[in-house]
Image (tube, rainbow, N blue to C red; front, side, top):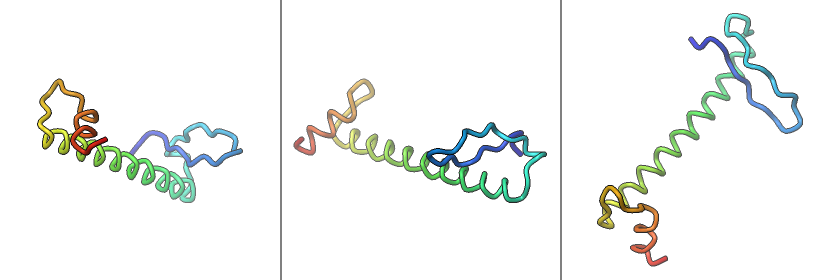
Length: 78
């Protein structure tokens, strides 16, 4: 278990400090789950986008020191 949990922040809300998990209510844990799942989804999307860019760059003939986005854009005609 994490030592602390964080909560989703809405515009206009006062920032909340992370709460020690031992002090969290069931509802607070539920809100923290929503926030953690949102972070997880965002991280997965970033990783997936980077994997796609990497694959396209390799298909465009890039090697290690080449700029991936530049090569892909040239191949795509941009």
